[in-house]
Length: 504
Image (cartoon, rainbow, N blue to C red; front, top):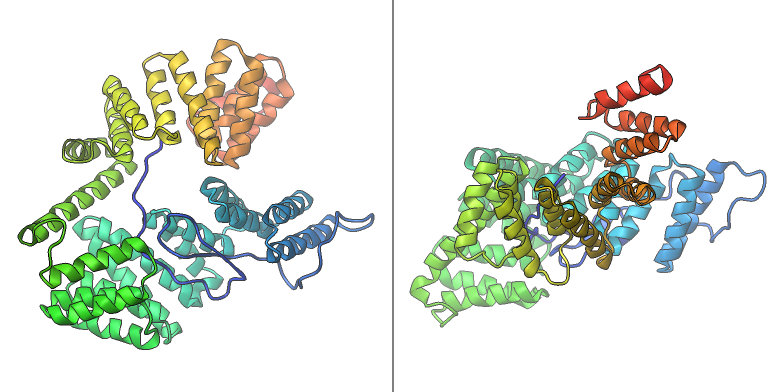
């Protein structure tokens, strides 16, 4: 396992109409609404204690669930979390409890835990729309539109198929992923985005956001008249939209109507609340009016084009790294490091990751350490990747220190790093610190929420070594349930046969 970090999403989404509670994530650039459900046919009872004698676990779980929602209505998030945790203990197959825990962690900015709990809900009920929708929103809001596509598509395969909001969300993700993709994929993704915007409009003809999104696709494809018509429809429905006025300005600028573009940008500025968008809009107005800006006007287009090209190279290189096309990723990232991104810790981390996976371990270690220099307050992903590179070189002491630092860096931002815990366990097991290894593997299992099967395998090997055979058998079986065709599956089956006489 390795970590790479992508860029942020820039689109601001409207709220999900049918949601009871709203929240937003810091530095996401968009508004975010997460589903908070209490199950079927429940009202809003007052807070209830743990079940009295005679109540079934299911009934008691539902009461805890509804009590948690009531606590959230009172802005008592921590107490609500305890109620949802109690509900999940009473009925571990209750997806609404995990979904609501995910919603609270998202509200706290703990993206890792939020994703874990949304996935727990989905594992119980694969087409559970609230958790699928929330997972998509969280992934999109953290700059991963390509990852948000799948959960939103699943929403449309179930009860959400007639939801204009889900069609709109999916269209946004497809559009943003398309703008980062190569030409062939770009055309396909934008075409699908257009279809979902159109469906959202058919389902809700008053959807100003869908008309606005459709106009952005039109603009991306050079359909300026269509873009203009759609953005005007959006503004008719919502005349205070800074986003729509901004895109109207872009359309008018592309049409060569500078004075009309200035008017649109000035209207956008009137309604804009985000400082960074205000500054961007002011710069565009200044350029159109011929006023001095940071760079000379005659170089403005060239600078914009250069920055756009570098941004595209960055996105393409990160995508290649994600697809494990290390040669392509290395080429692009090498250019970025040498042309202005040599102090960007994310680029440096990803460059080192590409180097490491291309067999250049020593150079990778150098660049992981450079990345860490530019993040003095902690960089969990780079510490983990450094640990893996050091272990590859045989420096287990250095690797152990890096994995421990990854765990500490995560704790500073209320995040977990189960992969680092797992690797720490491997090193401690090799050193003979079986108690420390046992703790590390169990933390990895707990923190991963079932997303790191190898930790069960590693714990099983440890338990077998200390002659806790029955516990080892349980861990091997758990591993095989989670990863029946995993790299260690054959080994796990062989050990089960030796320990029990059966591979199942």
